[in-house]
Length: 218
Image 1 (cartoon, rainbow, N blue to C red):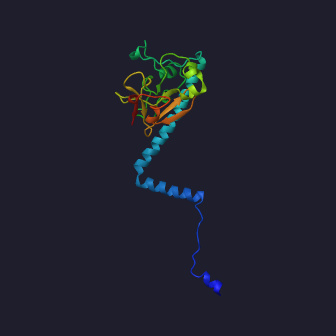
Image 2 (cartoon, one colour):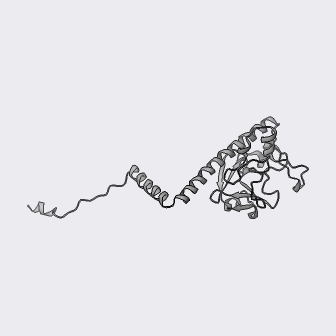
Image 3 (cartoon, rainbow, N blue to C red):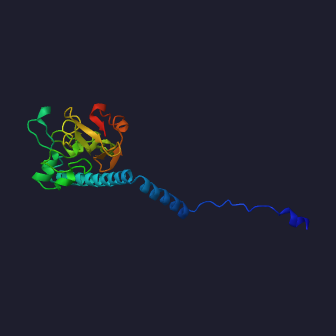
């Protein structure tokens, strides 16, 4: 009788944790609720995420087209000239790969996030860090694997005067800049083929040390 009285009034204890399915359900409820409360902002962010993913894949295709060119032209990268910097002729890399040799579709050579996303003979496209006509193996520091992984090839760009994408690299002129348009990050693909979304602070730090005036945040 005494033993029975000890348990009178005691409440059962619950220490079970949420399962993964239950946790995902809760997260899903919050996402759906957020989409209902802030539909415009939610849709805009999801759209930008999708465009950033498309941009990433297009840069991969630009890199693949560049490797095809390198294979066919004795190891040289597509030349990239600008008379404003003392080069003799104007020769965007994208016009060579698209208009000249058709290694690449024009709409693939520029980011879809910056309107109007329309190819214009090579002038509005991703920026290339190549200047002149150089060999692929000389494009990286000592042609080492580390050098290839640290050497940018193409990047999101903007002509600060016209508000359009621009083909030449950030060091060509005061109007040509890297553009952090994807939630304040710029997509950059490197000589080794890997791509990253980088913030301004990263681009201006080691090992790239971009001049802050050549990196524009949206």
